[in-house]
Length: 113
Length: 116
Image (cartoon, one colour):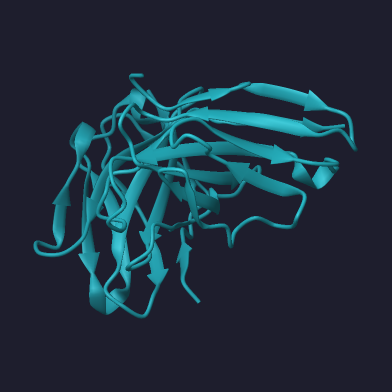
């Protein structure tokens, strides 16, 4: 069955530090992969997505993610975190030929000054 | 509208009551989705529509849950005889066209349902 694992429930970083949020998926075919962010009082916002081609994907707000097929991973990175990045981040896999997204349980990011 | 609009944003209801949650998608969006998100979990797919046709309702947990989109725009998710386990955030989303997950899906802010 398809699934998404985000091993880190909660991460704390200092402002200006680099960030990597982990995501592993289980899916038999080539996945469509997404990262969404949920800020307090906001809806889910798409940060970036991967369908095919270049395995390094650039997104909004300075985020990027790298698809590694051999590791079934799609980790999210940012070189320098800002206090406004504090939020909950969700990784999701889209099932081929359907419109469903399977989400991970999320990683809550705290940023200290 | 500018984004996906959901109402009510917060709903507290007594166990056994029926609840209707409304979703107004982005204007012109063909596909509309309902997800449920329990505390500490990621969103979980419930159902989706293309225009007024319900394409997939495999995620609806039981027959107390139903959804409709009669004119291909606004959608209502109805929960009958609510139970405490129904307490969650219900998220609506829409996308421009249904050609698989290649579309960007835009989510609303959600409706928080608490059943007491």
